[in-house]
Length: 201
Image (tube, rainbow, N blue to C red; front, side, top):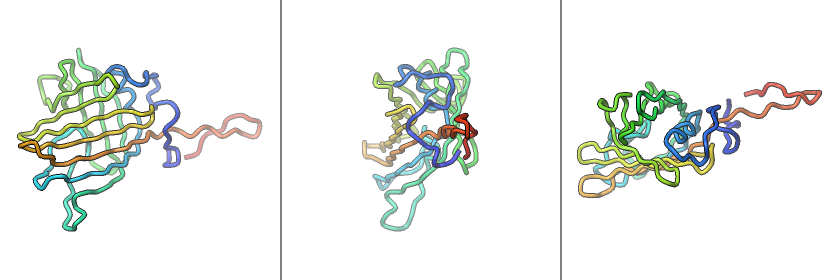
């Protein structure tokens, strides 16, 4: 697949058709599975902003010494795969960022919590809520800092994410907005006799 194959139309890469917009968490997670091209803008809204363990991969600050250090933009390629649901859980997602080590895993549990472990009693990171509009809200609390992330789809192959960090006392810390386009295969080009040929990357 190439950059030119990124599109906001077509079928989600998970072959099991997921309803759109998603009406439950299982459908939402199926919509997330696939390869994504992510464009993210990050904003440092407070002087005390610092990295926190959050729901978003590569959520790390990159401080700079110039006057533009309050904001940054970056591009990333994400590979998102489904994780099998253990017991009464809803399963989860494994997110790998191309060019970065490690894979971030998040399991979503029936009690409204999520974490890196399939067992709801271990490794709880935060809480999740699926809204009636099909958006997923994640809340992570670390000490006196709270990170809120919202993920939603405008099309099956266009996903948006926003995060806001709230510091002690209610002042804002960091914020980011991501626009993510699913990579899908190019349609097969017709051959000499009208028969499809293999698509080239």
